[in-house]
Image (cartoon, rainbow, N blue to C red; front, side):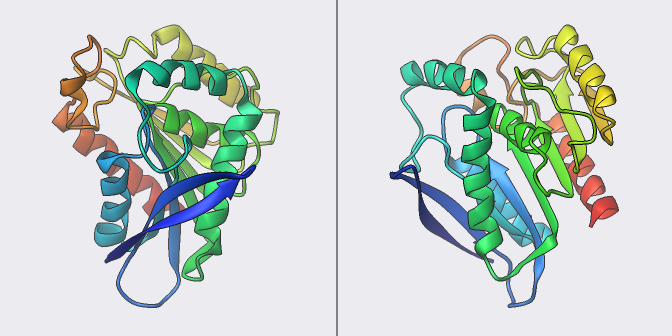
Length: 236
């Protein structure tokens, strides 16, 4: 596989994402990768590379903060708070990344998915709520709440969310509200719950944050990735 950094603009601001291409020149499924709250980092880039090298997909890890670099931790929660309060802005940032992915000539437009981690999973879900033409959406330890629930019939994608039962950021009542929202929208959805898993269970660097409830969990990382692959095999 090969990879490259791709610059694009939204409202005049510079964003830099990471494009990963499998070997060859044929048309392949495309996957948008939405990073965790702090910003585009080795974790999101690595997942895009893995999609290209292991699964043979075209993958684009977008940037929703700008300049392709993580924010200082002091700025992360204020920025995410703004985005959580503005689903339309969140969807705009996601759609811009999706446009970059779809512009690649190797992407099969009939086989496109979005995946995301932490708030990136929320962004992927907001794309689905907004009716984006996606075959599948996967959220890993993703926030499930929204101030703009999906309208009946709006969600075209098959939805998978993978949640740790020890995640303090996504409590049971949020999971129940998501279930009710997806059922009301008549979406094709599923939720996998994992024991002993907290927030950011896919990121080996999570433990270095030093915050309660944020911790890598290798078994859940592997199981949730396999669940994603199963959905892609079903969908693509």
